[in-house]
Length: 383
Image 1 (cartoon, rainbow, N blue to C red):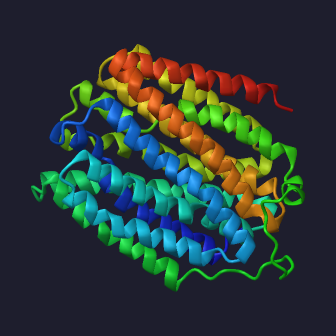
Image 2: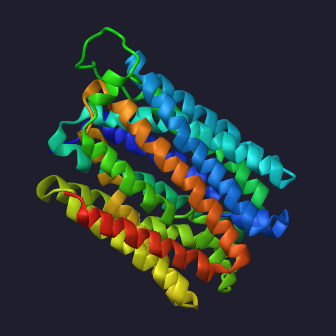
C-alpha cells in the first residue's frame, strides 16, 4: 500500500531534526565528562531528566491534542522549541547549563512527539499502521545515522570544535520546522466536533486492556534500554578516540534504519507479538555482550544488536498503541504510554549512572540484561 504524502513528509521532519539532535548528542557525553568534568552519575541524571521530561510531557500534549482535535500546531511548537535550544549547547560553560538545555530540548520533543504519532495514525488505515510507523522510524534513524557522520566530518575535515558543531546543529533543525509548517496537512477528523476532556473515567474505559499490558511490559523494557550515552562512554573506555565516538550512533542507527520499515511491513502481514518479543530478547543479548565482553569488536557487536532491538520494537509499539485506542483518544493513549515509560526511563538511567560509578560498566549492562530478560518472559506469558 502506498503511504500518504503527509506520512512521508513527517518522516523527513523526523530525519532532519534527528540529524540536528545527534550532532549534539553524539559528542555530549564526552564533552560533559572530558571538558566540563561531570561524573558518569551526572550524565545519567542529565539523560534521565531529559528523556523523562520528554516522555512525561507527551501525556499532556496528547490529551490536549485530543481535546482541541488539532495535532499539527502542537507538533510545530515542539519542533520549534527544540530548534531554538541548539545554540544553548554551544554557549554552555557548565554542566548546569547543559542540563537546562537538554531538559528544554527534550521538553520540545515531548510537546511534539505524541501529536506527531497520533497524526501518523490519523493518516493511515489499521492494516498499514506498522508500515507507516516503521517508515517514520527508519527515516528518524537515518537522521540519527547522518548526524554523527556530519559531526565526525566537521571535527576531522573542518577542524571544528565541539561547541561549533553544537551551534551548526540549528540548521537541519530549522529545515525540519519549515517542512512541517509548509508541507504537512492535517486530515479531517473522523469523530464528532464536540470537545470533551479525555482524562475522565468514561474516557479511559474506552482504552483497551491491551494498552495497559503493552505499557507494563514496555516500561520494564525501557528501564533495560538505558541511554545510548552509556554506549558512547563504553566505547570511550575501550579506546575509541573522541573524534570517532559518533561512530557508536552511526552503527546503532544504521541497523535501526535498515530494519524498522521492513519489520513494520512484515508485522502488518504476520502480526506484531512475535517480532516484539524477539526485540526484547535481542536487547537482553546486547546488554550481555556489552557487560561480559571486552574490546572494540564486542563493543560494536553489542551496539549493532542494540540497533536491531530498536528496529524490532519502536515502530511496533507505536502501532500497538494506535490499535488500542479509538481515534478520538489516540493522543491520550500515546501520552499515557509515554508517561509511564518516561518514569521508567528516569529510573533506569539514574540507576545505570550510579551502577557505573559504583561497580563499573559491567554492573550497568548486566543489570539491564536482567530487566530485558524479564520483559521477554512477560511478553511470552502475555496472551
